[in-house]
Length: 604
Image (cartoon, rainbow, N blue to C red):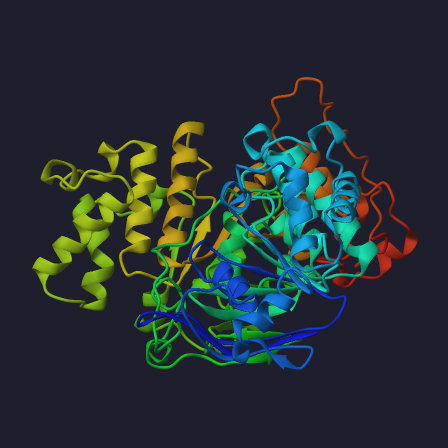
């Protein structure tokens, strides 16, 4: 029905839209999402010919190029075949006319009926959008926000358009009214088989009203694909950042923002100043929108890159398999929580990554390249926060020496610059940078201060991957909350990928994007944090969740499992599982995909 080809809109010298190519077939629904100021409203206004800027390219509507049409020809299409629900309801309605008169106006203006017929038709439309009949003769200032939105929808539908453009139709509405308006638009548009173009920053509205989604940033589309796929598995760093900002009842991780602010560039990737995985070429040339795994992404790196990959990784100590053929991927800027009870192999996995232990089998890849040894360049990119800060930092070192030591080993910059970096990193982890504090020794620090020094030491080289092994286990609740918030803020600013090891599922749900559950050296379940918490599939994960701390005194204690004491080489949880079958003792279950989960269980 409508196709945008190389659409460009300028306000003076500033390009507000550039290189927009979209196709929308009759009956389809497409949402354009992104931050305010990114060009969404400009795109909608350019289609109906009301944009104030200079428009180039083509907007083909049933074969006609709207950009080339005269104003008289556009008027015949506007409100007749293409209608728009404007964002600012206060400006869209005339304060001098009743809402019944305003809904009648497009019908009369396009000569689709006389005043009497138009009034009758307007009344039917207002009833259809559930506006009480007693409000038909009200003026805009006498209506609530939800009622005004209903009037605008009725106006847009007055002449039975083929395409309806919805510009932030749920902005500033309360939760219940928002749901009512979304349900109303969904019902009306489906009944009339309308083509929908939704411009919004509301992901709930986009998920309900659109089949496909395009993510717009600084006037360019950076990701495009089916709406469910983009919401469940964002591939562009900007899309992931938007979803991390959006509050939802299914969200478990604390909200995170996107560093910096939006800027418009003629050259280079528009997102590169805020992107945590940008390269030099991202500054030089704009990436093309190309297909990667079934969707379109504009990124020189093909979207969010795998930062750390563990493939069939194993470690044996004599006859004990401490880590058994684990397979994990951690993406750039992501937090993966590895959870499980003590002795399950979590710390061993961390030490394998760091090269403290040598793997018996398998391989470790960092940014796509297999690691064969650990040199200085490796430790510039990968650092670890150890579980016990008092053991991780030498008692012979002052705070200054402990934090500065990685810089000394790497021989980075001169001594004066190193001193400046140490002071800056201490302030970044919310520690004093005074001489008195930097001259203290570990035994003079509190547990929380020692852990922050350990974090500062790990961050001083600005690594891309941070392995945090129970970094809050010895801290009181207040200090733990501060350290977790600190790590999330540093991830937001620096784009650090975090491999977060913990036995505390309640903590894992607040800090992680994904959770991997480990038991006796095996990964038994892995998936998005909200899915693992909301719908665990493995019996062991369910028991961990039952044992997670809660302040509800009515929650029953987790019953102790009776060990079945059967020998075998099957599921590591078989001896403690109430549902264990004979096959569970004899055959090791493989990790299989169940929706967004991977689960190793015959009952899954």
